[in-house]
Image (cartoon, rainbow, N blue to C red):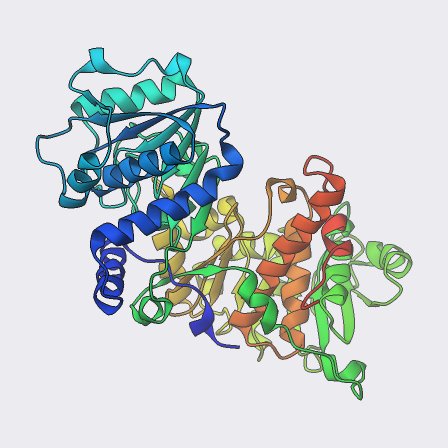
Amino acid sequence: MSLKHLKQILTSEQTREADKQVIDSQSISSLELMERASTVFIDSIKDEISKSDKICICCGTGNNGGDGLAVSRILQSEGYQVATFLIKINDNLSKDCQANFDRLENVKIINSKEDLPHFAEIDIIIDAIFGSGLTRPIEGLAAEVVQAINFSKKKVLSIDVPSGMYADKLSDSEIIVKSYLTVSFQRPKLSFFFPENSIYLNKWMVADIGLDENYIQSLSSSYFLLDKSIENWAKSRQRFSHKGTYGHALIIAGSYGKMGAAVLASKACLRSGVGLISTYVPKVGYNIMQTSIPEAMCLTDECEHFITRIPSISIYNAIGIGPGIGQNPESKEALELLLKNANQPLVIDADAINILAGDEKLKKLIPDNSVLTPHPKELERLVGSWKNSEERLQKQIEFAKKHTCIVVLKDAYTSICDTNGNIYFNTSGNAGMATGGSGDVLTGIITGLLAQSYDPLFAALIGVYFHGKAGDDAAKIKGQNALIASDIIEHLRIGE
């Protein structure tokens, strides 16, 4: 297992460096690289277009516009119905944009609002106005074109990035193309992972345009993609192993009315491959646990309805705490006792995070390399409010570094922050997983992986990815609307 195999997310400047490097190393021109990118874009959108569609391509005067002009020429040569428009943003086209303009006939020039295409008569709009190098809000004529595109409500396919969206940060304008599909070259943009941009990104995909992966991976980055390459990280089980080989996990969870959280976390922990699991619950949970999960050992607190203490913890390889425990003062005392006595990293979730959030003294007791798994509201309680998701990301980083822990922020693209402030964006999972108990399942998975001697960061990364993959597999059968947390457990297959 090595983090160097995870794909890095590049800045727009690094992307330009990678373009230049491949041009120099392969002895090709920038125009040839543009042709390659345009061909790859067309291959990526073939399922979205047909030769009966009326296609309109809106081009800017920079290299993104050059891509659009090349796309138009290639599509026309293949028999597609294409009308091409160049927005006269300024009088000077980039060198490669000019070269592609000169190779194409019947390009209509948009000099004013009166020259806009009749989008009502169009089936597909290809957006090639501004690319990933944009650093300021769209204004003037280009802004009018973007607004007209959005008003048309036609299917929009964007080249590399929706025009108006910044690649590396949140935009300071709402004049951004609302794209149905964005084809990003070589890597997704960091901005794709900000929730505010979801209204401009219905879906996106990455197209390989042949940049040098070894060079890209040599560049410095703090942002990484968690994708299917991690499937090779799971450990194989050995024939002559036994239950002791795969660790003993302790789950501390549940309270009156919330015993389902303990059941879900414990079942998920078992499905992760752990050898043994003990679940510590209030007395009210004993019969529920024994009948729901016969594979788990059950320990009970002396209190009937909630946790007031912790068991002896020396025999456990990993401990997860929080799902459904409530926030009673006695439960807080139990959490404090665990934090003071744990010699192993913990998985801290749900009510345990809410308890931590209200006490700076407890935060200082978090064992090094523990894994915290908040959803956005729990993170807000933990680190304070933010004005946007970009600031939220920075607060997540600051907390992880300050407390030497791993912070897993559960979201559409769950972000895992390690103790050095690196961020890993997960690409598995779907909206059907936005359902009660899904987070309890994740807590169980990560705790089980920790018990099997996975490094805490790898336990978090592997757990998050396979949790999402299980949700994707479940959604294929159940559908997203019908998906429940138990379905995620039933479809969990780590390393298989």
